[in-house]
Amino acid sequence: MSESATGYRVSAAGLLLTYWCNARCEHCYELSGPQRGGWMSVEAARGHWAALKRLGAEAAGLHVGGGEPFGDFERLAAVVRAAREAGLEGVGYVETNGFWATDDGLVRERLAELREAGMRQISISCDVFHQAFVDPAGPQRLWRVAREVLGEAGVRARRWRFLQSPRDLRKATAEEREAAYREAMAAHPERMTGRAAGRLARLLPRWPGEKFREERCGDGLEEAGHVHVDPAGWVFPGTCAGILLGRADERTGLDEVLARPAGEVRRVLAARGPWGLREELGSPLGFKNEPDGYADKCHLCTSVRTFLFRTGKFAAELGPREVYEED
Image 1: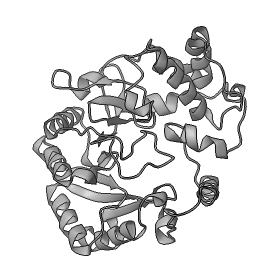
Image 2 (image 1 turned 120 degrees about the vertical axis):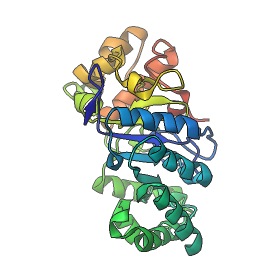
Image 3 (image 1 turned 180 degrees about the horizontal axis):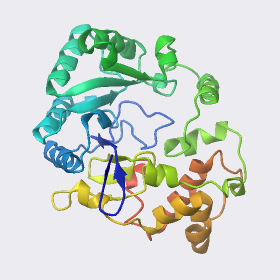
Image 4 (image 1 turned 90 degrees about the vertical axis):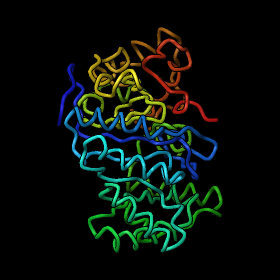
């Protein structure tokens, strides 16, 4: 783990190539979907990799995701190659929902190219939320062929049991999907942030905001050591899309962004959690609790941050619009 000048420690990082995705999953913290756009340039990615090299990052902790990065395979392959060009030993893994895996030959060809470019592992996002949009045959084919091309250690799945026993929810009724979502969240709780706060939290028990008064966010914000960089260069703590650490571009490297001191939003969240953010920053500007309450502290945080984002008073700390507003 490396540490920037003022202490944001980095052990892992992901480049989010795009907000575009063929799916519009109800648990997505970035609000990705077919209506989204924007792609990271290969040159920008090379700059981010170079900054991570300067910070001492290792390939195993680096990944490429989205949105859905396989929406532009040539760009994806070039971005993976750029990690080695920047002096790194490659990329730990690439994330995908497998929608593109329609033919064994295509899968084998693309995985071989990514392996040669420096990718160590493919990570398949496979759960009931994705199964509302993606033919389960794609992730299953990807898993099978990846084991041939990359070896057993070269493939992993988010929610293995859904890959092993797939459900095709593309034609399910709203009631059938909600039942599947409830069952899945009972076994694997999701953070109620991003789209989940607006679409999934209603399926869970809710409590008054005061319930989360003592819950802090220091671990997630200050100690997780994981950051994401979006297509425009905006940098987030790994689990908290929408909290800006800064913007990395041709003038300001990612390592320089991470060297900056915490802003007011991050400081309050780390010390006092979402309830403190509500009391210190939200209430003076007119924030009101949602009458039905909140499913977890991330739901409360998302509610307060969305309110603060819309005031425009914390533009340097909350954004971009893509993670706060649907198109």
